[in-house]
Image 1 (cartoon, rainbow, N blue to C red):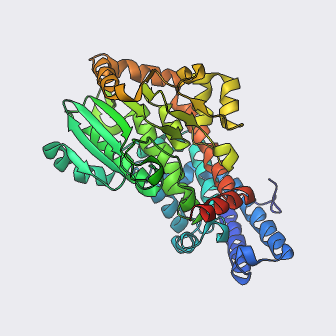
Image 2: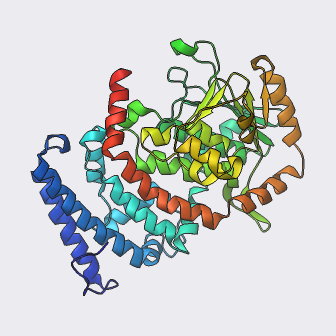
Image 3: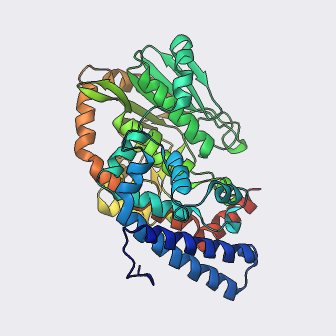
Length: 434
């Protein structure tokens, strides 16, 4: 995108000064306008034009300065900041580049339809950082480190073998970490709490030396439609998205760069000379359905079982958003035609149809799931399995390619969650399910 300051040297401090001044001008304009839903057509055009200009300046600035910005914020790549810490540090050090804590707090207090879309500016920033040859890989590794919450809970889990959280229950038994999704009232729909609990549970399973294999399965539901039945996952919680409680940094990006990426790569530690990663094999068991984010999860597991009456779907495109890293991973499982039918057309795949075997390793009658799970866990509990899965994942998902995908995802998903179509759809869903 072009700007009206082409003569200004991008690497001059004047570039940041110009950005800061323009950002303040835009903030002043937005502060004078009514809430987004109450604006006239002329007011919406004025806001859009002003935001478009300053976002062009932000994109140009971070593209030119990504490495030096990241080096400064991380003290020469010696600090390992997570994405939430990084955007807050950037807001303090580079006025106007990303929203301030106060601006984000104001955004988070509003419903999605009433927000200014400041997360788009975070997406611009993170796209630039993730694209950078040195900064991007360093940030990915920072997101693979164990969370402080997991490190705090590790002694308790090591002693008792049990950690109960709001969205996930973790139990260790006979070398297996059993992760059970237990949001029984909402069919394990995903939100920020679920992401936090899942990353904690994955960290604990990886860090505990007595765990050799991990299993993820949905628990029994109290929801009226599925009372007493196990359900894997209903995908993103659309009611919370409509309410403004699904954030780019703490949900959409943390989910992909945090616990899902840790299932693929492992958890990053100071480690030994032969590896800085602790990684282990994982099994997923699908009862009833794996919708949206639930289906995305299946693409990173080493063995997937499904009950014969279950189904898989990725309705993100019909909802208007991007289904995480499924666009990056699904084609290698299903081929391009089926991937497009699922992602672009919303095709639902039943576990008992032939194409299900492209995403699922075993399909068994519902009553035989427990026995099939035990057999799958035993097959993956071998000394050579971790090294071989590590090499498979390295070949299938080179870190550089994953980083490039996530860089573009950071911005494109931010744009999508503020699209008029998305806000309209999730608003109608929330109203209809109230």
